[in-house]
Length: 569
Image 1 (tube, rainbow, N blue to C red):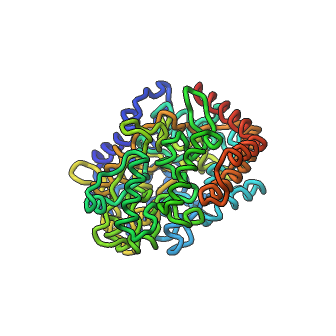
Image 2: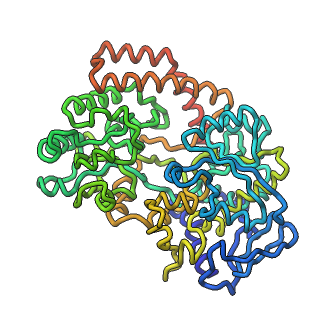
Image 3: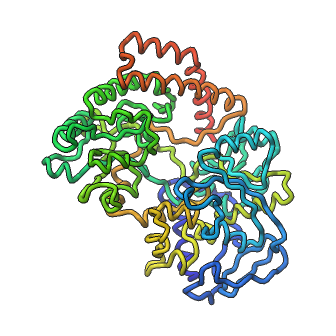
């Protein structure tokens, strides 16, 4: 068992170095082995589930403790410390439970047991989370641990100045496990630290750079019937969609398009050098996409496709997620192409009874204008990191136990904590195969809650915000879905993936400008695509004038300054 976990630890800590192809900082703090846990040598191979284990002995604070199954972990307290925590409930399980720490969730119940602390968790709905978090921060209604995400007004350097939350980099001895991930790759380091040189939050990390986890798919079974090949260029896409409409959908629109026209895959917009974020980089200089000629050309394409009946008429008012096909249209067998998450490709919808038998969605690479010339704006750029951003979980500095709260969150980045978060408990939710690789049991793969794979992950485990092991996510993927690495894994030359941080003044100014820019862009997007307003020189120039007045140049200037700082971090 110890050997198998050691093998996994290699995959956690060495793979980023190989995959990211950069040299880690040589003076990085070493992981504190007292907080990186392995089972005792005599641990049985079939550990019982958490609710069957005996209570651990109560040693002195900080001393290891072992339960009857041989698990050893660092005790941060003796069940005499209670930490408050605020996070959100994933939509996928909101119909089943109201708290993330419901009795069936393993990490939120087991981690406190292993570390000897108590948790008092406040769970917000994911829909209301952003607003309620902002209100709590504004009212200084702090908890010991808060999943602040990106909601601190003024940015994280302002948070440092305010002193309300622990500066993690001032207490490196509290976060040895997290620092291992931070220094595994140079882009990780840049993403973890603010421009002023502070780590203010625990962020989501992955063991390797993840290729695009969503992208476009087409009905392979329809292509085979029609003797066609998957499209590569915009022109080939139009030809395929017209054929689908005429011969397969009874005249209905075959293309599912996200309401903004800008899914994260940048599948069509990337052909025109337009990124969903609004920013691209060309020779180190940022450009604002939504005032470019490429944006106009993309609007002209979408209007043409809308006018020809290739895009579902009400797509811009749909509440459908960007990486799912419209269920009602699936049932009517009219979705010929859709932007899907990896786990929903291939025969997934047919197997679930949501699409007719035989419906098969094959992955395709991003569309381009010229055959053989790949798009320069894809899902990822060359500055993508294995660490999400400088934002994430923050620790209240004036709580009763900021040190214990910090060490508790660091536990999730240890070997044992990562396994617990991603796989649960051996013999209950996972087992090790002959190669020492974790595999899920039927409790996850064929759960009795009626949940699909990622729904079960949300229900029993934790799917985001801490360590997110891509190997785990791939356990559910079909052979077709695993092609996402080649089809959606291209690095776009112009795609900016850098995790920027801003000064307090910049953060306040750019957020206000961005909000107004987005409102104007979305307003004209709907009018131009539907033809309510004709897209011509006059309406385009009026739009450009209005975007100029809102301040797109100042917005770009702020972003460029942040990007320049990122380059030299």
